[in-house]
Length: 162
Image 1: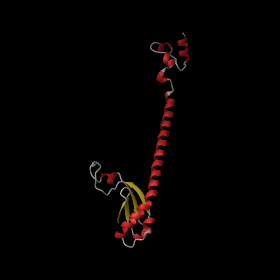
Image 2: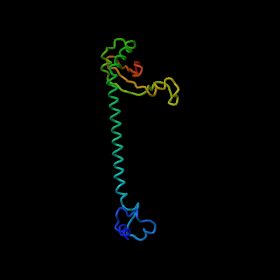
Image 3: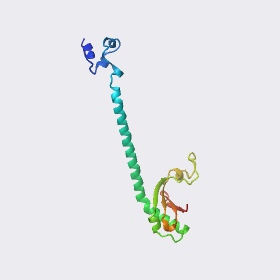
Image 4: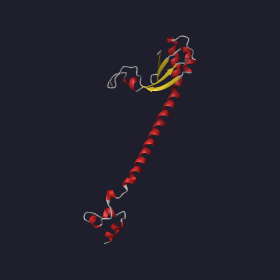
């Protein structure tokens, strides 16, 4: 009789104690999935999932921007020196300050000018096309428009006019 009274009162263990024919004895007491807690919990769970996704997205963004800034700070000087050396042969009379005060500097992954397809993983230039980091510098106005691609892994620069 104690089991019936605790189930009829609707305490938290009523779901586990009533089974089979016992469910028909207490028509006013709801058991299991239809007890009204699911519609309240669903928005809470969705909100927590949204917060977790936002936190992971923010962490990924901070990691990527921090890494980019650190690489730019570490290799900017090396890239400007290499671009100055390469530009001497292409454009005579280009002042050294042109590359040091370049208008734009970008970090890119892979050299899109190489003709290697994604599925050609045995190609010797595959890493250079899809994996190697490059700094792209654009010279200021005194030299006209010169672009320089600095390969960080090979410490080599290539200068060209667009």
